[in-house]
Image (cartoon, rainbow, N blue to C red; front, side, top):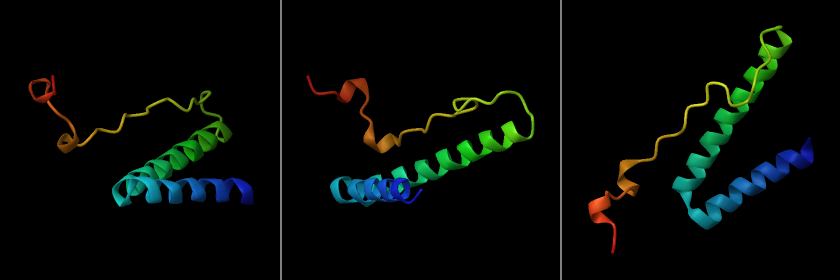
Length: 76
């Protein structure tokens, strides 16, 4: 367990160092959501609910509009 936890923390620190605070916060928040979903799947399985799948009910994260360009704005 300790080695895996250290790997997760190391990866998040690397994201912070290489991509900055905003990317780090997004990555950390997504990691927390994924952990919660994984725990939910395990709990549903233990409760005898239908066979859960990790991708059940996953909603894609929306991208912020400020980082997108419309087709008209794309460089030629």
